[in-house]
Image 1 (cartoon, rainbow, N blue to C red):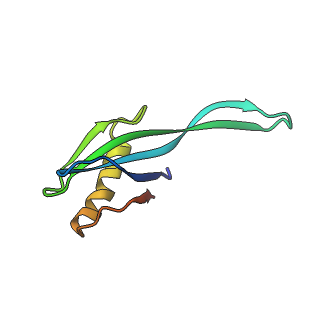
Image 2 (tube, one colour):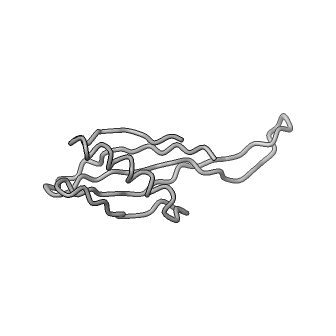
Length: 96
């Protein structure tokens, strides 16, 4: 299964943490278009993660709808890699 997760820094004033929104697309209802093709409405769901600037510890602030940990753990892993380099990017992604 291919996944794509976008990560966006959230502008919150916090000296101890950096906050990120993680988002990804999930399939929605299937429908038949006017041309007779089967289509799929998809939607973007999002959650929030915060990372301790000093220790690198990740916290799930709010899970994305339907996320059982699969997506947030991958998003946190991506942010951890940046933290290890001393970086907090404005925007990044995880694809696999």
